[in-house]
Image (cartoon, rainbow, N blue to C red; front, side, top):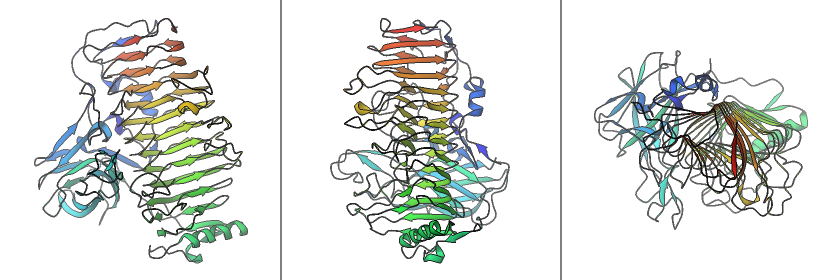
Length: 612
């Protein structure tokens, strides 16, 4: 039985008690409603029930657990002073964490999944080393009060420093620290954790980090490893090493080549496969069906030489006819930038006019999953701790018939702690305007949790774009959703339908950001008269750290219907000054405003006309 993750709507309350006075409407639509002090659970219940990915795990926020010792919850909420720098609180899901600083500090949570859990994913942060590079430290796990095992945590792939004068991993070079968290998959030692049993994470004397900041725990009952399918070739038979000793790059590629010649599929048995060849050509799975024993069992691990040799690539290429499933891609990358010091590269890089399929793939510590071509589908997959976008449908910034970005669907995927937009579609015309328009992207029933940079969902230009029934929870730096174009070279946003999404938080530390933003570039030479055309309906926008829905700065045509804006820190709906266009606003509700804030504010009444 799969579970829909709604951790963005529970675990920490963002509402304040007590009635608030009714504030001016400023004529944002004749049917707009201003409501106050209504619990968020009673608002948009149908939207909330449908939003987000259905996953085989259940996420529990640490702050919902029982604390012992001197453990404490640290959190932020709408109305708190605007943050201008990253923090552990603003990068946490639910904008809250549990701090374990002293021996015997602990947090206890129940297994309320209704079935045993034989794996956990612990999302946590421990301090960096004084000179950078990270540390390793254990944290003890108890089941029903009895010690079960020590979990190894690390900060070696966390704690980057924005604008550091030497490199992004140097804490002493004047940069702003961010990217604090990592998630740690754990096989539970001994018997699975039974339903209604408790798990306790406790700092004991053997746990040597100065502090453990615990954000959340995923509980999952992972089934047995899959068996080798018929008519397949095993990478082990071609010399790949499942024991992570010798490089398996050539052996894996040889298996793919042979399978395509023989009309067979590729099998990656249970194991961890080292890929650290410095050949300039990456693994190419174009046209091949490649299956592993399960994303918890089969891992292709990039142990990247650092600094990365010039021209060396470690992405997995996907092309027309590719079908990838049931394995994991992980890496030792420490920050963004392939062919550079950090070692990050795309998880998968897809292209091809003939369609491709990715199913049950888990990428970790990679750059974006870069998705171009036509008629591609990625579903039921996960990405975590990335240095770029989670899943990005695009035209690859190139005028190529194999990279059009037509009819790409991103469906039922889970992204957490991404280093750029969790889910995105980009239509970039390029400097000379020759790149084609992205058409028909669908972003459906996905969950985005705590991206440490950029937005939860970004639509940057394109035509016939659909964003439906997604859940965004706790964006750190930018907006929960950004609907606009890609810089000054971006093609216009000709048409986007955005409906049924639950968008929590946003409006983070990175300048002036919002819960949801509909906009267009303030200056563009290629498309000076273009408008962003957006239909926004039946969405729940809740807990923004600034304004709820913002329109601007230039040319926008928006239809905004039956949305609920709940408990924003500033205005509910705000049309910026200088906006040209039209807005059809009906049936929207703004509620739970903070004292002194207005529900609706149109600062362009003469140029942005509001109609029923």
